[in-house]
Length: 73
Image (cartoon, rainbow, N blue to C red):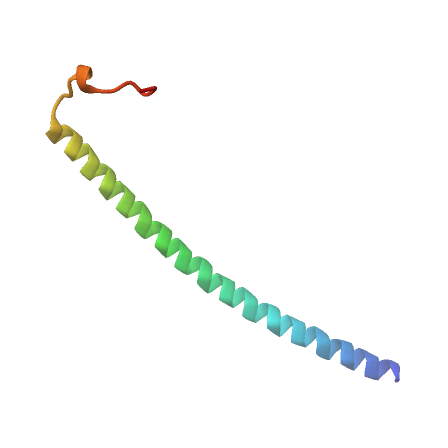
């Protein structure tokens, strides 16, 4: 093999690896974007559920401390 042939083969290998890496990066970018979207949805849901819980606690009224079991019970 001549030096030019070796260089050409190495260039081909590098181009193949580069193309594969580009595809991998694009795929990972898509996945990360989807995950961030899901995280945003879950954050909004959490805020809504915290509000609902606060509303329920307010609607329940004060609790009688005599009816609450201690944590070690």
